[in-house]
Length: 186
Image (cartoon, rainbow, N blue to C red; front, side, top):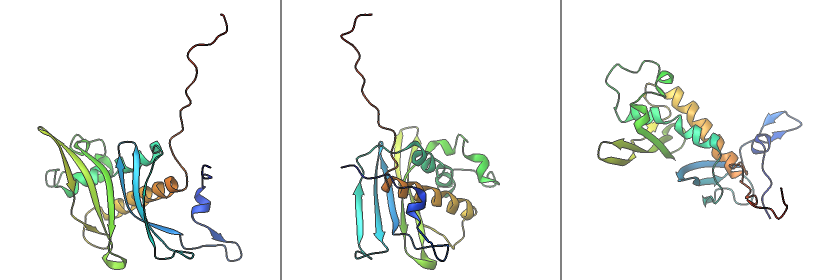
């Protein structure tokens, strides 16, 4: 039986009497695109399985919104990899379609540490003259020095939200095969 698709409101339940947002039931710890599918891991924050960790290999095709959210991280991969000449990037949002950023394709992330030591590691592919390289970029601490930390954090929040929605049932629309020929005459 297919799972019911969860809405964003169901992913962040609100306590009716207080009108405040409760703790999320899960915390996404990593995700990686594999062709049109998603593998991800999370930690359970509520219920009898609190503290348990789960790894999921998705069998449903990812929604374009998830692919787009990952693509918004490409420019950050280029900056972290020092692909841009010094002083070229003043406003990172103006470089998403830059030729340099387009050489990078972020396919995953790992959230490492916790609290003040929490960091993100981007997993990317870089197109070079001789082919493609797989990169595991250095960790960027969320309270550390990275010139575009606020922008990276905002983009990571979007990616994590899309992974949560995938976990809740947001997939690419399923294509229905229709008959090419009918028995009825024209």
